Image 1 (cartoon, helix red, strand yellow):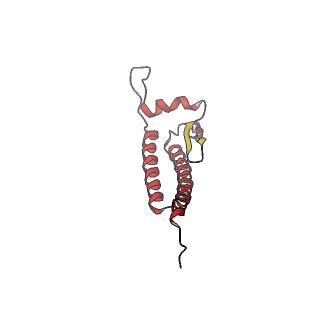
Image 2: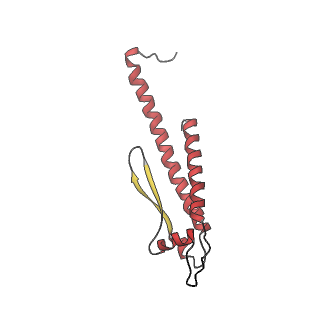
Image 3: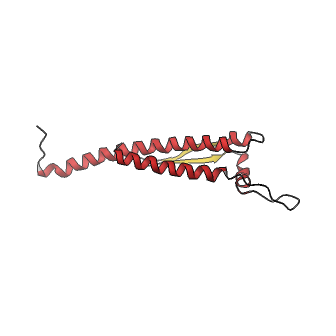
Length: 129
């Protein structure tokens, strides 16, 4: 027979179950955040300009903030290569008045990562873990 709960204890039991559920979802979402960031770094390295290879090697990420209920990861390009990011992504003017071609690899991979993150989080919430 199932355990019986007294009406006075119902609030406490529901609170405990919701806390357990919330902790499981939080743990899963943090893991999803790390996995999506790893994929984002891998994909941007793969799509980055390969002229010398130093730019792609400088792409990385780090965990910038973590609390009990959240985690924040930051994608970035290490010094001194970070200066090239905007120029590669948007193109730039040349000395003779022309423009260089843009390589929108950052925004393309960012959009993919955001969609992937949203889908995985939604799935984790629906499945309960």
